[in-house]
Length: 291
Image 1 (cartoon, rainbow, N blue to C red):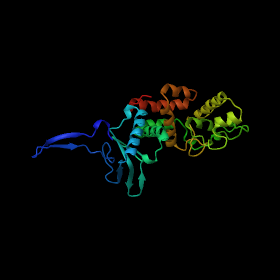
Image 2: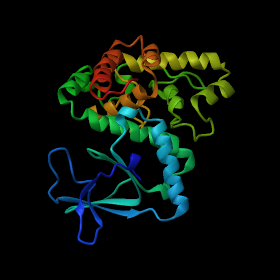
Image 3: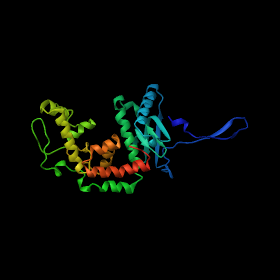
């Protein structure tokens, strides 16, 4: 599926039978701006032939475009049933791939309807992150804001005397669990207590206003270290495990809110704001994306 018939078609001549001869542009996932991978990696795709899957792919693409600024639109979008990246060492299944002029979305059979919105945002952020990779010097400034020793740390490293409220009373070590509900990723949500808000309002007798106040307080504790979230793959006790994870988590928060709202959410956290201005200059001035 392509934007506005973007496969280039150039008239060459009229052959001896009177038929027009055209040269068509070839789209190649191996091709970059000034090079190819010279055959070290190849891609194998299976086209979408089932009408239901075709419509599902189009619905997802519509959602992706709605959530993606026009400056990030690619030259072409490929919609395939499946896509595999093949190298000498492994076979990798691809659901999303960004190349110089192309995007590819695949594996629609496993994509649930209720996940389309969040998946589209994830892909949008991955696209921005890919483009940010071209600005190595600016990213060095971004990562330099936070001491490298702050990565992969229990939050109690910074706040040994801080306690996390629970329905049974305060406990140590402190965690950033109260922030998780904003992303629907509360590790405790599957327990009998449910989310932090549910636990504290139902069993801890807190009001929603008290929960909101504590969420704001938790955000400030996390932000003092220059971070915006915890590393969910390591659990609720850890800061981002490395520079890459920090950038991914930061971009998710940054791209979620308009500039004015983001700055308002983190206005008491100078390190977070400093990191924001570094990325914002690239995203706005270099990529042409206004937040």
